[in-house]
Image (cartoon, rainbow, N blue to C red; front, side, top):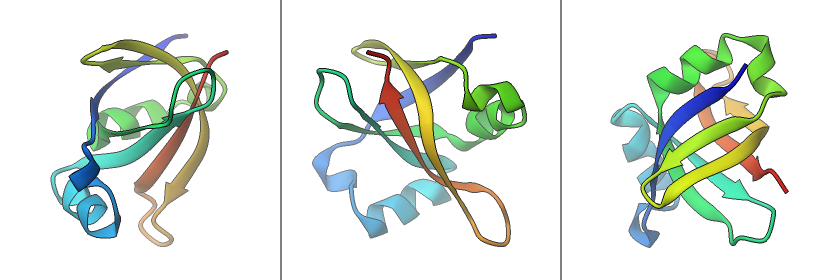
Amino acid sequence: MSYTLNAVVRSAEEQGKGASRRLRKENLVPAIIYGGKGEPVSICVKTNELVKALEDEAFFSSTTTLALEGGNEEVVIKALQRHPSKGFPLHVDFQRKA
């Protein structure tokens, strides 16, 4: 099964603890794409799209396509941070498929 998430690249001003908290209030989850031959890219994904994908166990081991404005990235989820008591996602790490 293939998964597709819409993502937006974050600027340098949209990084850090305060900016991440503001993104979460706008129903966005901060994330990062790293690995492969490219530089790390800070992005954010919609919370509802991510939660829907996380409901399926196969999401954690499947290739996911991130739709960015500069093109698509083939990635695998490497780390997911959740809120300790509420369980909603706080941050996601994606690794590029080499």
